[in-house]
Amino acid sequence: MYFNIHTHKKTFNCSSDEIINLFPSEVERISHRLKYSIGLHPSFIQKKTLNSDLEAVGKFAKKENIIAIGEIGFDKTANIPFDLQLEVFQQQLNIAEELNKPVIIHCVKYFSEIIELKKSSTIPWIIHGFRGKHELTSQLIKKDMYLSFGSAVLNNSPSLYSSILNTPSDRFFLETDDSEIDIKQIYEKVAKIRGISIDMLAKDINKNKKSVFNY
Image (cartoon, rainbow, N blue to C red; front, side, top):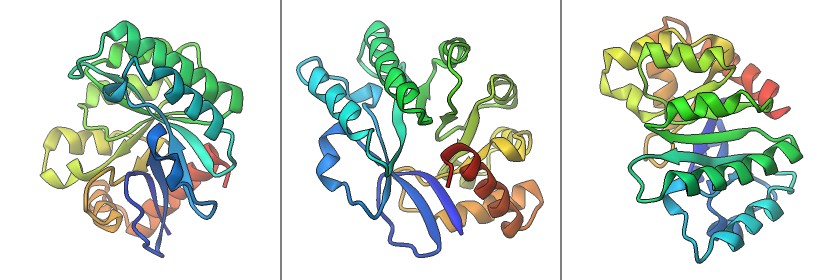
């Protein structure tokens, strides 16, 4: 079975298992039959709703089928001061650590800050939608982070291929994010890049799923 670690859309694909991302304003979508992550994205931080958004994350994160906190993190392209992004990230990280749930991280141009913050956290961190170069890949792996690759793998980028090849099999996830692409296409492309069968790739990723999410 394919595992899609991060999607904004329920696909109803019987051959895939997926974690559906929720923003605090989307909690009415929760179904007990599905698995979710919940978090306040750095680009959507608003002071007028900040307290209620964080309260929603804390409340709904306690549900058994909310299996990760995310996507949370940092975005240099967002018109949000870094200090506020950091405060919101830290509060959500505290929720994740209290509940012992992994975090799914959105990061744009703040990777040195992410690497520094990881030093004080022992829960699993997954960088979603990763498309960085080999040097950054190595830095993140050394800090025990997981990398999740998405639809960018279909764009024939040699630097991204290098990152895919140099990510250990026990630090690896795949995702569709908000794209319309079937997760199977991403598995097929990544298996070809890594020179292994789709079955072997799926086996590796399902081992990681069990290790990080305990199911």
